Picture (tube, rainbow, N blue to C red):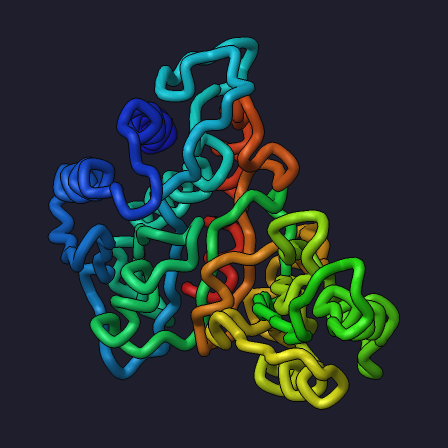
Length: 351
């Protein structure tokens, strides 16, 4: 109970402290100080904080416990102060409470619980990382080379403590078509918008062959389009953006190649970093989770799982639908339940 109360106090301190992506220095210091109170010596790089268990043994496999302490900016629909951690009817309100403060403090509590134990079958690494909300280069990807080799990871995000054993990747593509600009009254112009429509129609109707039982089909959506500056001039260029959600049957590079082959537009991927992920249902952690009545599913939303090369699950207290909403909250009982379930499942494989 003491560790639960101290975890909730930590979450309140984090809510009070602005930690919008790229501005997480103050919350990193709070987390570092909290760990130090348990005689744990954390390490830092940029705004990331991590530590290993006391009896770390490089001959044992290693489990990473990871969640992020950055947040999105509060939206304009808040009726409560997003930086005031108030509790009403069992709900803790505040920016980042659900995404992903509840997961973060629950994982920190679990790490502290196991920290001094000398009879573990696995090592544990806790990492409170930055820039998750923007998939930034100074987040978890900046410290992977500094951590011990990771064999498995739990990524703390609000999943109602169910097991997200697959996650869609994200590929953002900028497209441009070129025509011939001219007066709208004449017939010698080539309208770049009409050229783009042909490719957009293909994007709307094409289906990738390999669907996933967990993640469904690869989904392509044109989300932005821009062309022309005045009504009487045929635009010579049309720019558009494609948001592609990729299942575990394809790499981002493979999906891009298919799109590029079937379209005439000039295409450029912003990044290939954010690939899909999945883990076998017979993985020891997944099997232990199922034993403890956890359900498995595929997640359509992106997390730092996309930046990990090891097997991983996404799992944490809270509800995904509350993320990034006004008057964000998490139930205190969800944090308590999260700590208990994490500990129970890890006990199956750690001891």
